[in-house]
Image 1 (tube, one colour):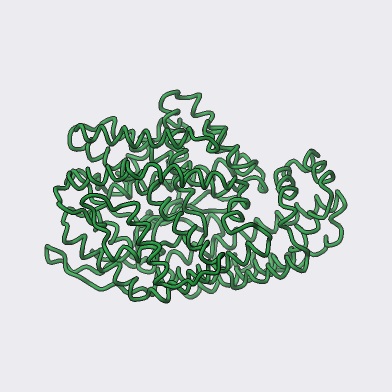
Image 2 (image 1 turned 45 degrees about the vertical axis):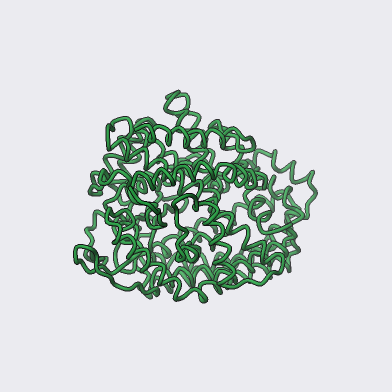
Length: 593
């Protein structure tokens, strides 16, 4: 196994960022013009009690934001191609500085708007000229108590110069600076571990290779645990500062309120998952039995239990499988997938210096993009479907909403992606028999385990870490590792399952923890997706049309209300119970086989 340089990757497997900005020189030109225009944003200061000035200001701010978004997305994705290229590291730093500068200059906007009476703001929200901003104005009314004075808002904006450095530092460490030891596999092959290769080895049928990869991975994080803990603790304390500065009850209150989601949804998820941990334990005991082990270890959780029916195919074949699986979403959706595969939307393979993992991103006015680090595993086929779900959500939202309403909240961001995964696994199961069917049933269970149980475990870790900081309790690498060890024991330790000591360092390699209270949305996303996918498969075109209402709604209303368009109400127990029933029924079918 060897990671190629970017120049060795075929052009057809690279994304085409020129569709955003044609060249680096053009980026420089737009950056210069945007910087000049940004200095004009202050011309509306003191005038935002007047209807016409408010409308002009909001439109000017939109135009500026569209250009800033384009500049940032282009520079950041160029950097993600190879994090060692200083030019793009510098461009990202420059655009971040420009974003902070313009954020400071425009910091008066929210306080001035918020200073208007509720009656006046509600009148504007109903005015047809303000149709693009109706939801924005509704949120301003809702968040009046958390909007500070202009000097205070400017001060918080200035903090943006350094508030993201904890996440940035961890990203540079995790993608470039971390050093993994080499090891020799059971067949004598020398392996230089990387994030992508680790993921592939965790699905190896050879247990000793999995253990070596596991030990090598977590030894590296253990060796740097104090540095990583310092970064994470700094990030948590930053979150506490912002929550207190904006007069929220706590960090979770700030995070959920920022997305217009009731905090009760978070607690409802944790309660439901904790009630069903015995169901997870039942699955783990089945996995141990199916693998033939007397003791199940943490490095045994990803390997297929059927011993070799993995759909490890080349990327082009994987794309065909994904497209066929998503045919229930209609011809229009299929045509968009063809464009994604053939017109430079996707960056496919791992290369030296490339950002690890996968994501979908983009900017208003351009098609969305997908970053992959494709390996020939079933997991990676599902990753294609997952990230294209994000991309199609963005495409439909941008095509049907004005800029102020196009960006959907993170809370619903994982729904479209996991609907694609649910449809893919159902498609594959419909054709499978014997061992392959057992493999896919197992895969569905593992998708549920990693997305609902595992991400909820992560959510509990975040909740406890922030609570420690909010209550003034001492935080350290040792304390964080102990919190994680206990949580892992609660979720995973049952008869015949070992809580390996190295697993207490797992929290240290989760980049999403630097975007606080993000991970629980994977859980609510899969729960919602399973319900919507079942409805699509049972009710066809009617359900697809309802689902497209969800995709097209963007960020035009509360995300919980947007989900209701597709038939899911997360303020009730129904979707959580339905999802757990699917997990239980799938496990029972596998047990019978």
